[in-house]
Amino acid sequence: MPTEPQIADELHPRLAPGVRLQIDRTTGEGVLLFPEGILELNETAHEILTRCDGRTLSELVRALADEYDVDLSALAADVRETLADLQRRKLVEIA
Image (cartoon, rainbow, N blue to C red; front, side):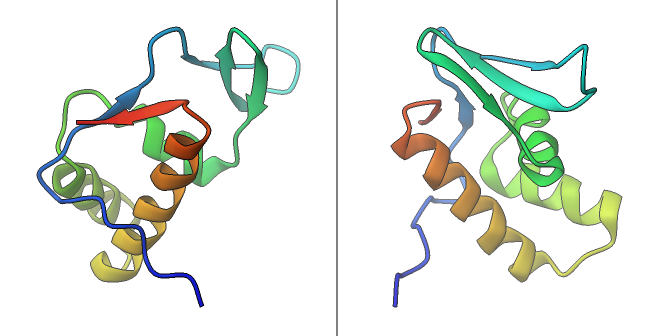
């Protein structure tokens, strides 16, 4: 069974250089544009990435939990998993 990605609460996730978050004009869905292509995002990933604006991981999770009234610990695990996946794809940096 895979372990939960270990991204510390005090780290700052951000888009990698050359990666842009925008809304596709045709579909209205969030996408990541990068030199090698495009990645369509689900609503959750889009909401996470719109908050990668200099906040720490814990601030980002707290903002999402407050907005959507969801359990903080379950949300934190989902956010870490999403960011770890995007980090493996070199679309997000965490520093």
